Length: 313
Image (cartoon, rainbow, N blue to C red; front, side, top):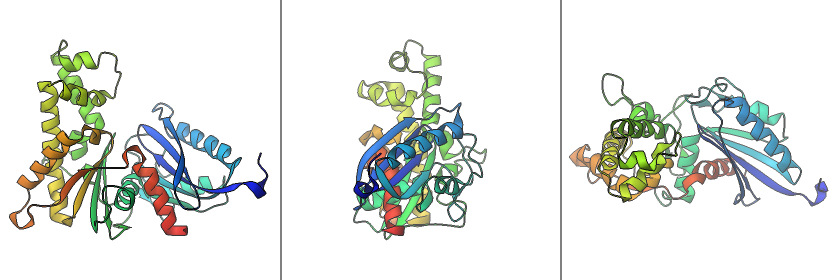
């Protein structure tokens, strides 16, 4: 172990999602300089994630003095209590006091925030939303989440959540935006096409893929596959329609598309922009600019570090 007199300070940002765990380190200037990434084992659930976090923090503490930890969690949270309210994706989290658990391991402040809120702050301050006052961010990952940043501050409603656009209903039968536009929803759409067309392009591309079929959608689009284009258009139509509600409620300057599906890039962005405008009242047109997130996979942990800077920097 290093001599404590020669050890540098560090600040830790943690992203806990449905498919991945990310832990990043930042220096005294709150600049991220190291990152660790782990795949989430759904069978092990929350216990497996906590084991990864505990072991990584133990290793970090051998090299650095930990001055603060900030978490972006994939689900509603009680920020003041430091507790997870609900995980819609993994067992073992509901009601868990994650801040208290971490404070038992480190003598430093621990801040808890919803992952989409953290990512929204990251994109607003360090990414595609810089220089805009009203930034609405939507993450298209294993689920669908959102966050709103106003003048550099996260908008918070009554706990335990806000801006939960993934749970907006698209019809009276209960279909939600998350049901149609999450990564898992797109996986399901692709598997449906594969079952119908076992010799089709998507079936060929996904032959060695066991889950996470959505990662092959861009390749299929680039190869001109009609089924892939239909999945893109259907998904973008629902996403744009759902986001039109956010436009009418908040009238943001910019909408940032993040998460794994945002890697579809311009084809997704253009179609979503078109659908939003087609469903927005004339007075609000042309409406907010729609852009792809710039921070990519680091949006949540970078936002978590920014949130920590605001609280203790």
